[in-house]
Image (tube, rainbow, N blue to C red; front, side):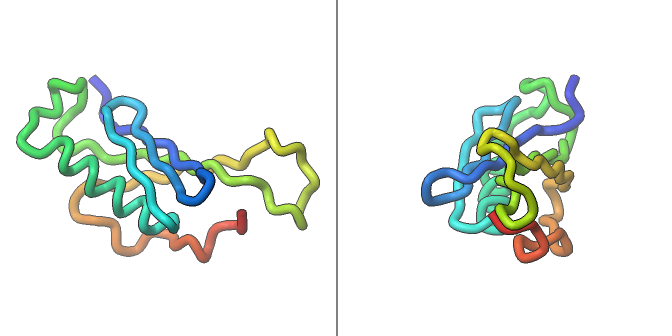
Length: 108
């Protein structure tokens, strides 16, 4: 049984996209904050009136979010295939109020 819901956030053409790895949830947002809020809501709606054990999850599973970012061009000249990955763990309830904002993350 898995204890967490794993999700991956990456920059699409015009929006950030969040995809869960172990349940069928995909969402997007214009900003990182909007994407994370949409992800929390989408996962909550997906699990609403469902038994998490049916998906191999424990009760009230937290989200573990991996964020893919391009390295800042002024920091290093790395090939486009190199990405920075920042894991973020958040609880589904109550919604996270004091998490790191997108302003604290390196620029894309």
